[in-house]
Length: 470
Image (cartoon, rainbow, N blue to C red):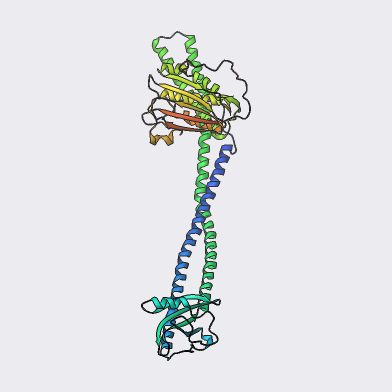
């Protein structure tokens, strides 16, 4: 929705050095760059870590599988070698002696050790779970890994037949200590090396991000410089234009007083005076925004009743609403806020004037003030066409006007309104009413002290039975 003109306050803008607003912008840019740098570094480190985890897990799995396959093949060959020997009760066998780490024993069908083997065979053998599995498996073979007396082993259990005993189970056992140590060493190397690589990636990512953000940092500096020059130009131009506009207005008044004028001359003077008024309003608005940007506006913040201020601002536009055939309603409640009475009145005038401009003849504009423990809330509703969804993000932009907007606005009023709300540490939002029209909602922090006496006794307008101002 386009916004209507608003009365500004004069005063020269500009000045050397960084304004508070510029300092806040610089600080915000610094935080933005730091956040971007940290994100780039985090993505660099996390992506490197993810790649290392995938590669390390794959390498570890391949090595573990190869070691397991090699051990299984060794057990299979040793089982075949042992099977070629006649075996019976009391037989045990170590391949290459006790230090070979691979030996065999014989268990009966009940799982009892038949071949006592050599003295280096660990306790708790045979492995009963392997015998049970081999007995139930169709192939009569079971291979598994386990730990006996703290020793990691791989056991291959094969079902066989002995002439003296009958069904027996040959268990060939392999010491996995070297295999486990190899896998542990590999895991340690992968973890340690991975941490080093991630640390290096984070370091290089930090350096790269710092260099990569240099053009962005320079662009932000140039943008701030350009914006500062624009604000200084707007402030200087607005200040300089006030003098010739004042001279033109004085000249028009002098012509009206000094000589009688016929109808065409009076009409020309009226046009000149009207346009001078429009230009003066635009200049004042530009100067107010320039001073707001530079931090030159100082608020006199005191506890004030937002309901009183809204009544004063709306009352100033009663005649404007009447001329346009719009009913202006007021429903205020006491709402003590911490604010500048003059600026809050100006805020009300901007919002109400904007609502009147976009309300059809015979429509209604409502001004409502409510309060809670933390905020004073000012709402201005209208019966206009509302705001298109694509226009919502641009409502408070300077010089922006919606396509097909009514003539007469400068596109600065709502930008000034938002600036006033921001100076009061408040919030302003705009929505569409379900029954049609727009609704502007302003929230100003509540005051912690009692309000000051009203400077203008009796200035608060009373509402009629229907809540209408008149």
